[in-house]
Image (cartoon, rainbow, N blue to C red; front, top):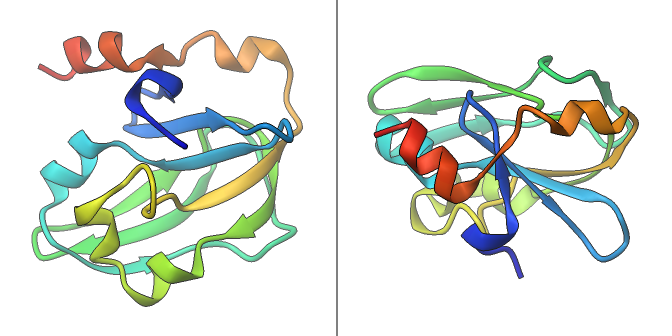
Length: 127
């Protein structure tokens, strides 16, 4: 189960959560969702796609704006949340449990984690 206590956040408002199988779940923080407003469209990559940290891996459109979503760590996509693609409003309801975006196998090195913040520090940063 993903909770705010178990995630790391990027300055571009994505979160990372390590799974029991050593893969990582990637999504948008509740702050990002709040800033976007009602989500109406989401485009996610295909399983097998490779991304470096900082690459655009998805796009999201809301009633307010369209935004690019950046990969917070390097990885290969192993799973895509089709439920959120088909019903993007799930992001507004629960970005951590049912509103995750992709799961990846981490392909970077531990240095990539250094600029990610725990949720408490992240919320202080975005105040």
